[in-house]
Image (cartoon, rainbow, N blue to C red):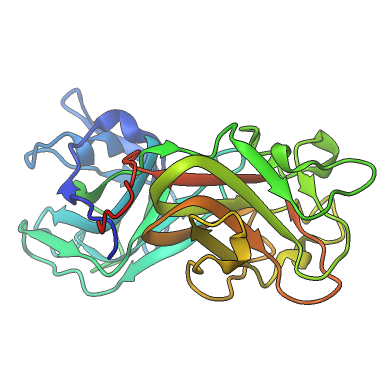
Length: 310
């Protein structure tokens, strides 16, 4: 049985806002900036302005939640203005901020106009520290008036793989030991000297010993930088194994064959609380080479005891 998590609406924090589109309106010494959507006050709202006119359709707010969070639901409050109410939006995530690399999480196109009532949208479960809320359409094409945003989820907890003992089936002769994938450096540039690298072999595998069995919420993998290297596509497809056997390929898989977009430096894979002491990355098939620049294993920190079912 999957480990149980408690989903709550997160306490809003205006300091999460690090960037937003447009120039906030200032009126009667009140600044209608993006921080207003996280102040918990439905009497205030965000009113960005631009010189591009109507149908800009790219009104965004970038959020840094200060730690990785697993989000499962989003809520918004329109202002009840038929011309400026949000009609459609998308939620995106990024594993890093230098640069941001946005992955779509959820797209919504049926936000109601003419009401200030809270509207909630689910259907996703993703983990990241950096998030972007993008308004892709208002009901009349003008800039949005948005009162509030709220997110349901939980703090993803610690990266329990950081600095732990790591192994791989082989190591490239000129460098790339397994420990570099858990050294805390997410640089995806091979020349920075922080990526693990196997030789070419059948079913190359890397794994980390977490020291004890954890309920794993997600695994984040940083691939080698495509702009610098020839071979960022070598990781596809890959498998993730989680379990208590140090013969990691015999442990259950988290999902099936995974692929990372070649324009994306990282991927976050939800493992739904799978239990295990060992987390492994395996490339199935002959003549494969595994390069991992960083692997993060997120858990709420709760140790799973022998015989425990959840």
